[in-house]
Image 1 (cartoon, one colour):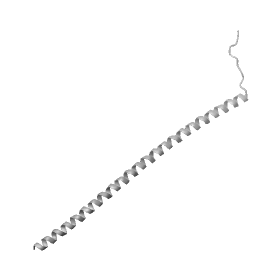
Image 2 (cartoon, helix red, strand yellow; image 1 turned 120 degrees about the vertical axis):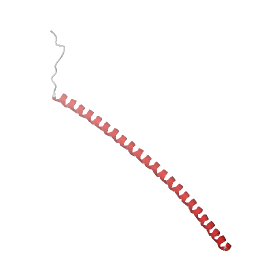
Image 3 (cartoon, one colour; image 1 turned 120 degrees about the horizontal axis):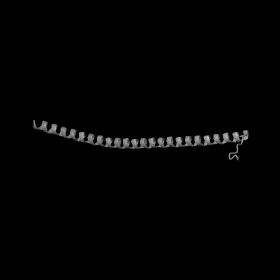
Image 4 (cartoon, one colour; image 1 turned 180 degrees about the horizontal axis):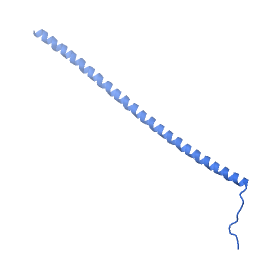
Length: 95
């Protein structure tokens, strides 16, 4: 009868080598996971900064539009005051 399976005693150097390779693989997986996580955070921060830039741009446009509208309203009020003053003067001369 022939033994097909040869049993080999595991020696300490082999155990240390296997454990070292497992530790190296674990460190590689951990480093890869940490790198992927950091890239995700960087993309999220970049997206937030872009959204903030767009918000600031919209605010600046709104502020500019509001300023223009205020200046137009001030000009219209000024013209209405001058018209009211001229109407008052006409009414005084009629009396």
